[in-house]
Structures are given as C-alpha cells and as structure tokens.
Amino acid sequence: MAKKGMLERNKKRQRMSKQFDAKRERLKAIIKDQSKPAEERFDAVLKLAEVPRNASKTRVRNRCLVSGRPRGFYRKLKMSRVALRQLGSEGLIPGLVKSSW
Image (tube, rainbow, N blue to C red; front, side, top):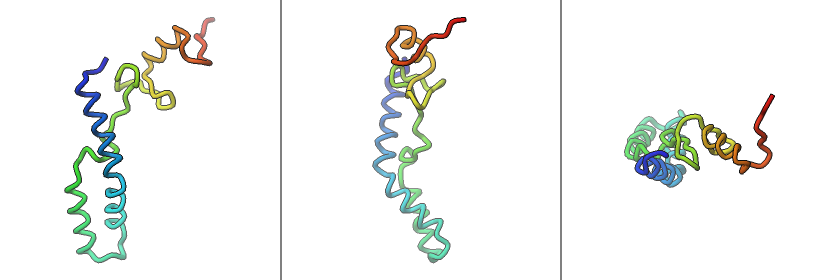
C-alpha cells in the first residue's frame, strides 16, 4: 500500500487539474496564436506561469485504485499488475481466467 500522503497529493493534483484545465487551455491557445500581438502573447505566458504547477495534467500519476501502486499500471482496469493478479486469482474479476498449460 502506498503512503497516504502520496495518495492525497495525487488526488489534490487531479482536483487542481480539473479546476484549472479551461484556463490553461485558453492561455495556451493565445500563446500559440501567431496572429495575436506579441505583447498579448507575452502577457498570456506570464499568466500561465502564475497558474500552480500541480494544475498540469502531466503531474498527475496513474495509481492503482486498490493498492495505490504507481508502477505496473493497466489503464483500462485502473489497477496495478499485482492487484490484478491477486483479485484474478480470487475470481473477483469477471472474464479473467488464470492460464494453465
């Protein structure tokens, strides 16, 4: 199990990402638009720099919903490989069959 602080930090980043998503996209669109004056684009760069770093989507870490493990993460199941194997062995995941040969 991951530390509670790491899980809470990641949840905070997810909340901030959703909160500032529209503002970040609007500012980035202004920055990329070459038809706008340079002063306006520079002001947008400064405003984007004022937005908290944790509001960026790239700072959110994919973590297992069961254990909080950050590595070996399956996006489709939102679960780590360790938790997937454990729950699959217990028969708690529909359609998952343990292989044997």
